[in-house]
Image (tube, rainbow, N blue to C red; front, side, top):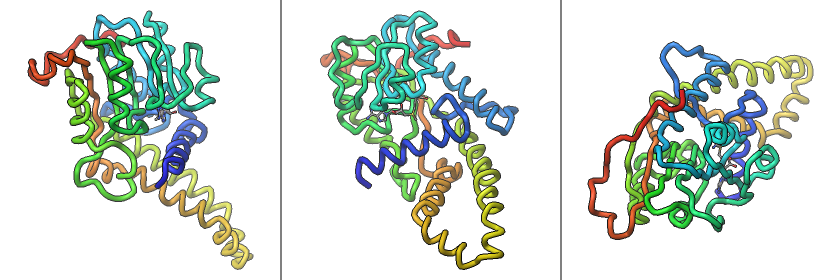
Length: 288
Ligand SMILES: C[S@@+](CC[C@H](N)C(=O)[O-])C[C@H]1O[C@@H](n2cnc3c(N)ncnc32)[C@H](O)[C@@H]1O
């Protein structure tokens, strides 16, 4: 798959969540057991995810670059909480939504004018090639500054359609280490996010597939030749829908992926190997 196809596929998924499901946020939700199995439930879980992520921001952080800032809701919340925030994305529509300093580019092409205390990548790291992600992050973050990554990653044995998105976890962590990023917090939240896929799958099966079935039933009965002609005409679109539906399979997701919440700290070159790779957890519960 070339870069453009990959980008279009990513944008299709985002458009689906945003325009079809009506979600303002473009990331998974963090679920509790009793959350409602509905789009409203997804929204609540997404808000919880955001608070959980933002509580990872260390207390000495003042300036933040939100890489792949999406609809900008998180950046807005950060601004309201007193941080100096900038956003970055290659998407012109996201620039139009922004109310903060916005860099319209891919992160791998970004040339920072300042160094930030913290960079946040909420489900955007998977779009940024390695090792460029850490190379540019290293040039953009102050020494001892932070990189928060929340995203899904592939396990070594990953295969099938779902394996086309996400970095391999092992490689990601290796490259991070090579560029001087030490991991301060590492949390696997896979089991708490995959209900987002179940709701999306349910919605697609119930509303999208059933609507197509109902709409085409009459044509299929009365004009079978026309029906098969239409199917042939739209075969690429139909195949694409079938492929996209496979991307919502939560069992397959759990088999080949891990959703990780990680806080890295950029260390002085000399310090790379001094400390243990894991240090104490940083303060939580500031975003409630
Ligand atoms: C799944 S959305 C996540 C949006 C937002 N961070 C959130 O959590 O709702 C992925 C974001 O990454 C952005 N993106 C895609 N490719 C990128 C790249 N090469 N560099 C920076 N951002 C990129 C997209 O435009 C989009 O804003």
